[in-house]
Image 1: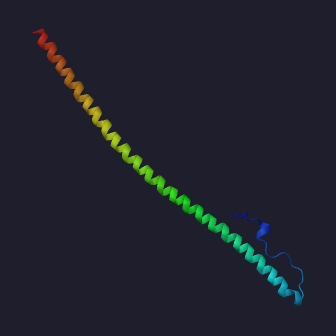
Image 2: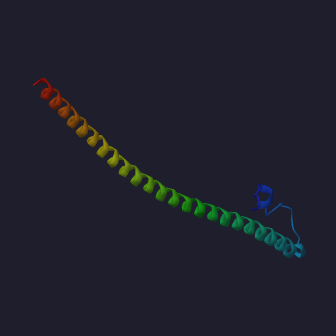
Image 3: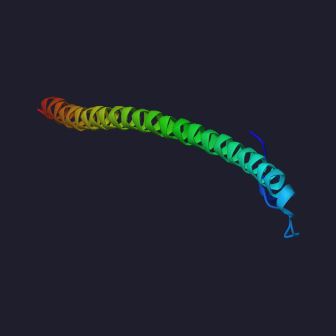
Amino acid sequence: MEKLTNEKMRTFTGHEKIGTFKAGEKLTEFGEKQNEANEALAANINDLIKRVCALEDEQVKHKEIMRGIATELSAFKKELDRVRLSEKLNSGAIERLDRAIAAAGDE
């Protein structure tokens, strides 16, 4: 990609008086400079379009990855909650068994 500068984009360079015989030559020169400027602009615009498309593609990929992570995180939280509940239930059962054994030993 060619860097655009004010100088490269300048297609008209002066306001000097132009004679009738030089008008066609000057008009041709202006047209050639304008074409070069248009081509440079088109190349830069096309490059920017490619960059934006690549960024949009990356954004879609990142969204998909984040959705996958969110799904895995949700599943992990459910499993963690299940383990915590099992731990509480098991602790309660162990305490009851311990009390029952202690009560049986006291008798």
